[in-house]
Length: 104
Image 1 (spheres, one colour):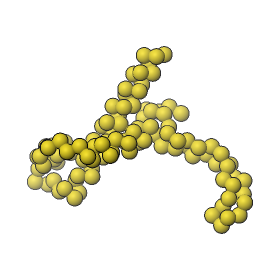
Image 2 (cartoon, rainbow, N blue to C red):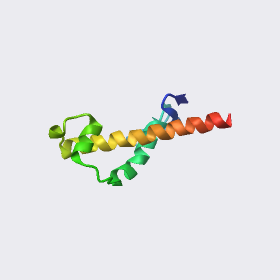
Image 3 (tube, helix red, strand yellow):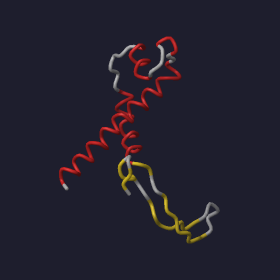
Image 4 (tube, rainbow, N blue to C red):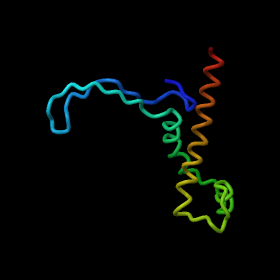
């Protein structure tokens, strides 16, 4: 399934064959998976978190749109990393769409 965030990653349609107590069952299930954007962001997170670009606290605060004096590493660094990961992921989805359009 294609959406504004790319295709879905890891959708599953099948059957659950055992319940949590170990009893045999046959229940049809369908899980949509995650968006390709979310998958790419997760994959980018490792690289983004290792990328120490030498930026300053002032740079980080500006990227988050907050005053420098309000920046707290403990609070804001994870948010900054997630924002960067999704930025890379959005670029990956856009490049995928471009390549698909070029090959259509």
